[in-house]
Image (tube, rainbow, N blue to C red):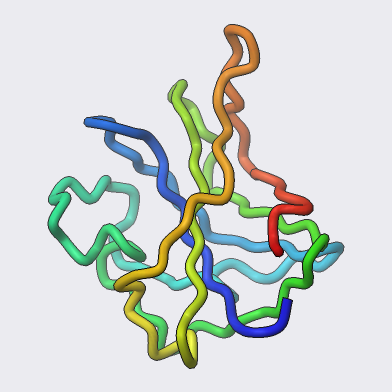
Length: 138
């Protein structure tokens, strides 16, 4: 897909507190360095608890100023890797937005859409260190 797409991960639902750091992206067979193509933040591993805070968009202290973008074509697989595998049972949801202009200038203020949920398979939750998507970008 041409254009800049940024992704953000939101974990949990309802009153849950999410606190994992999705810090690395792989597209196709390319694994990028930590924080390349992902907005780096200053909130080590604490949940954002203020539901009216702009920090829910990209986390505390995150800025797009130094974030590079990567093109993802329809059908490409991409993977987000965490700093530590998920160790609490619960859903993992992926939300994305398409920046209306330069992704580095966009504050994430709108246009979010959910692309995928990982939930339990039977009685087993997908508690992983990486989450792979494929055929989800169009």
